[in-house]
Image (cartoon, rainbow, N blue to C red; front, side):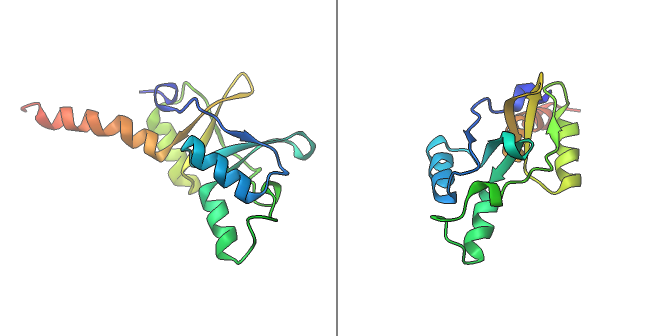
Amino acid sequence: MLVRDAMSTVVLTIGPAHTLRQAAALMSARRVGAAVVHDPDAGGIGILTERDILDSVGRGQSPDTERAHAHTTTDVVFAAPTWTLEEAARTMTHGGFRHLIVLDGGEPAGIVSVRDIIRCWAPARQRAARVPA
């Protein structure tokens, strides 16, 4: 199975000036765990995850004044829609992250998460377990 088959095409894109509270509200409303941060002044595309927001709040920072740009990962590893889910899972494991932005033609086409991969793999594993050897 390929990344394009598992990825979410609901891509929340925010700007670097959004507060963490605004980002969290948008992520919650869309039921996503990450947002693409588009910042042409700082090199283009980054990612802000629920963990980034949680870490900031855990350090006592205010989600009403902290801006997305201060918590965005800009050294992003991107996936291609033609990667296998094994490639995506290996990349996530190696990098220690749970989301990959999927680029198609240089533009964000989706996000694939650990949850997406599990959602695809779980039914296949159940089917394989039911097939007698």
